Amino acid sequence: MVIKQGLVSWLLILLGNSAPVFSSGTPLTHGAHVHGEAVMNIVLDGNSLFIELDSPVINLVGFEHAPNDEEQVSALLKAEKTLASADRLFHFATTKCSLENVEIEMPYSKNHAHKNHPHPPEIHHEHADLHANYVFQCEQAKDLTAISVNLFSLFPDLQEIKAQWIFQGKQGFASLTASHPTLNVN
Ligand SMILES: [Zn+2]
Image (cartoon, rainbow, N blue to C red; front, side, top):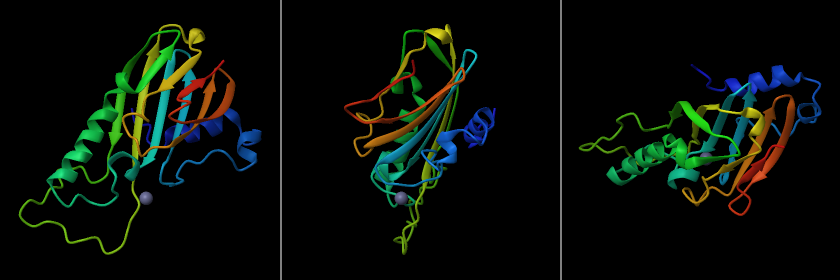
């Protein structure tokens, strides 16, 4: 299932262009690139829960360029592995949601280590984003009242997640932080 950048289109379709949250021009910030911030779109459709995360790479590994050494290569791999461990990242109340699919797109990570001929230093800074897509199946979607996002302790450079959600026709927006990592959806 390819849902890269698909949730936002879906959100727009579900809500229609007249929805105030979109017609005001905010807070849908897909594609925005602000260091320290990430964007999360969450859609519950039936018992299927779709979570899309977009974050500047620098929030996850502390740099934002092709890796220059082994340490940076492993930092990227470690971040990718952490993001794939969905069970560590999300906690659901008060129903059980099981991971069905996860897709992580981490820039620079495709066996890009040039051991014997390292990349030259970056001349100019180019921003890059991590995209992660998760699909869960919930046992009782109607009982899903909150989603706790455990990303701030794993990635201390991440300061805020702008989360937008649509649950069974209801919609909302929340700013998640280390001190308020729980999205209430009821
Ligand atoms: Zn950047």
